Image (cartoon, rainbow, N blue to C red):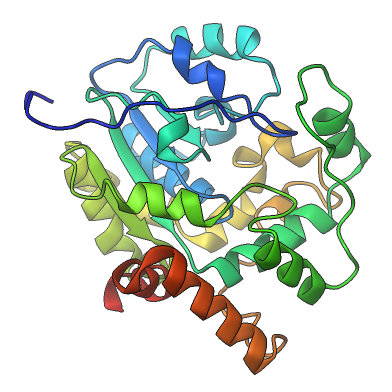
Amino acid sequence: MENTNIDWPVKQREVHSHHFDSTIWNDIEFRDDDIIISTYAKSGTTWVQQIVGQLLFDGRDDVNIAELSPWMDLRIPPKHEKLPVVEAQSHRRFLKTHLPVDALVFSPKAKYIYIGRDGRDVVWSMYNHHANANEKWYKALNDTPGRVGPPIGKPPKEVRQYFVEWLRVDGHPWWPYWENVRSWWAIRSLPNMLHLHFNDLKADLPGQIRRVTEFLDISIDDAHWDSIVEHCTFDWMKKNASKSAPLGGIFWDGGADTFIHKGTNGRWADILSLEEVEAYEKRALGELGSECADWLANGSAG
């Protein structure tokens, strides 16, 4: 980016936990065409990684985004193993993060895509992810060198309790939710920033893929377009889940099919009480303000 009058975000802190080692971003040598894909988690990250991978590799059906697009700030494997692999990539890199902006080294060279999703839908997806995790998952996160803070434990038996605790302790047992959304929303006007929403991807997948194509300045051969769109549908990704799930899904009971789950919204509506729904919405409004809270709940149609 050539504009020197922009106040680019500056890293303010490090984040460490059973999942995170944010220090890896201090050591990345950015390239002019890097792509960074960010969410809080369970908000459409893998979906957008698939979209970008399909655009970069002309709609091929063998694109393994789990290998090509690593979660950089996940502390396993450690950064001394991960960084050389990323540095050796000769294709246009597309890297994943779940950090808030102030824990990243934000590069004017890169292009950033943030995906939003209603927090209630996030929790329902996270519960499936957590409840089906196997002992390999717990050992990798809790028993490997470098963990900071308490281990992540088993979830409660009921998703409703999981939601109540997540809302009460702000992201428990994962990481804070509101600061993540707020930090990315605050930089939405930067020239190298694109915001997508899970609802919009579901409502108009081809249109949203076009938005990503234009933002990333990618030229697409029309002969590949139908394959790109097909390979980004949920049904196709579900059938080919081993190409999306980390290590082919070995960390979850049910394998990769568990990692790529339902992709549906609103499962909370018949479970949460009116009071619980109102508590969430009041919290969202207070944490984010009306414009961001409305976008988070509805997407661009809101």
